[in-house]
Amino acid sequence: MSPAEAGRRLSSFERYLSVWVALCIVELAVATAVSLFGLTSGATLATVVGVLVEVPVMLSVCAFCNRAR
Image (cartoon, rainbow, N blue to C red; front, side, top):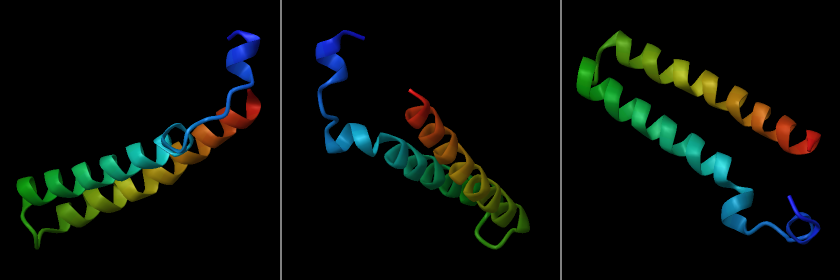
């Protein structure tokens, strides 16, 4: 990374990119689980809860990596 790139400010899209990706992952997991298992299945709930547990972990890893730079 050049010094000019290091000093530039991030746009709001770049700053919140991991949040947008997380929201897309959650939405995709919900849609996939409902289409595969149906709305009233316990597997749907397990799939969605599993993703909801993974996403905050992913966001915290991204935040840690950004701070470590």
